[in-house]
Image (cartoon, rainbow, N blue to C red; front, top):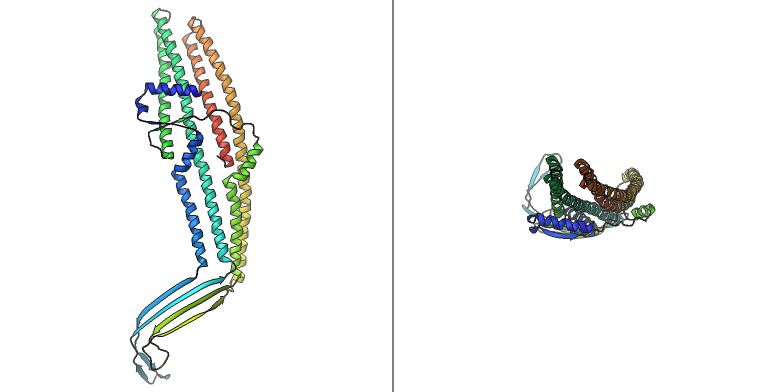
Length: 436
């Protein structure tokens, strides 16, 4: 089949040179297509940015270990003081320095809060793991997407080869019919039927070529290649790992599928969330220190227009008493979320098992179908040869010949599609395990 494809490509280039001379022809395997997609697909570039964001979030969370430092400055106008007797009978106006200013620096360092900071950093690390696993899942999806398009191109090339071979036979048959017509052995409508059969083949070839253009454009866009690139699949059509049992793929999926890993990580996230909630039960111990400078000095009489400076340092202890009641409910919420994460993991495992089972069965079915359709193709070819011999000896009519040709064409197309379907089902099986 590979030799037939190359022959078909050469024939198409010879018939339609303008379509190829301006294009960049590139032979690629499915593995090369997948690797190029991982490097260049825009969806993966967006997903990779989520990993960078998660990593930066870890760095931001670590900032909680650093002290909080604040500096303040104020400039103000100070009005005169009005002193009034306690029975409001007399009042005295006390002049004040009108210009006032204050400067202060304060630093606070968290010493203890039940391990809140470290647990928050660990939570951010788990979020990073989830973003990486999400990226892995996107990689699997993108690989399968481009490989599917790649196999569609492969399928079209196979179909094109079938159509070209049948057209070649139809042209030879038309020559024989024209000879019969010139000898008066058949009527003009026999010639017309032969010509119509060729037109139908030309129509099929045209549709295939246009579909191939669309697929190549889409693939080139996904792979960031020049849009006029003509991708020629050269993947071997031999069966891949058909003898490995389903249990192998089930175990592989449990250990490698990013969705399974994400489900397990979500349980760790739920556990860490409960730990963070429980830190509310612990008191907050912090160290502080600062220096302040203020003018004028108003805590003496008369007021002195001078700066008063001073510093302080110490340890503070605080505790939210309401957490004795609120934390219990928040912990219960966290435990419910963990139960949900556990159930979600079981659901994911069930879905993965069903997906792997279905993919494995379909892969085995595709191999068996290819064998059946290969036998059908041989039978159709044998029927065509017999009918052709009868027709050339005037023992069969043109309608029988066309019917035999259509059967031959359809069986060859079915087998060509079945060959590619084996590859498709194999890569679908790998995707279900997360190892594509």
